[in-house]
Amino acid sequence: MRIVRCRGWLVGMLLGVSAGAVAAQTTSTPANIQLLSFLAPIHSVEDPSLREAPVTVFLDVADQSLVPAICELSPRLRDAFMEVLHSKPIPVTADRKLNTAAVEPMLLTAANKALRQNIVQAVTLTSGTQRLSGASSRSRALALGCSKIQ
Image (tube, rainbow, N blue to C red; front, side):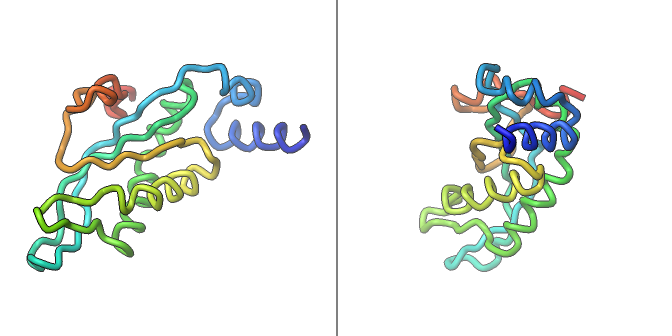
């Protein structure tokens, strides 16, 4: 119980929410957050001239009340993602598609490390740019875009 209180306090300090709100995280509404698209490093064996590709990142969080605080830290998240992607670029398959599944677990670790707490449950990386709150897949159609929240 002591660890939970300390953890709630730490999350509250980092994200500006109360410890009670963090404890109530299990009963809150989950949310999808769409970050702004950016150019990510890629690695193609067949075409070495390909060096960057546009990607869009979606974050799954357990508590919708944390979305504004996470969006406020989106530059820190993007820096963490770029650090990971520069050390391990996104591989390109033989049919010239990005193998985003190869780097998503590393991006999840980087996101939680950048936020200094395990708040993000999943990171989904999609190829290409996406309109804010208008993703092509049905599960991401209601994603909250950070620029629309601020």
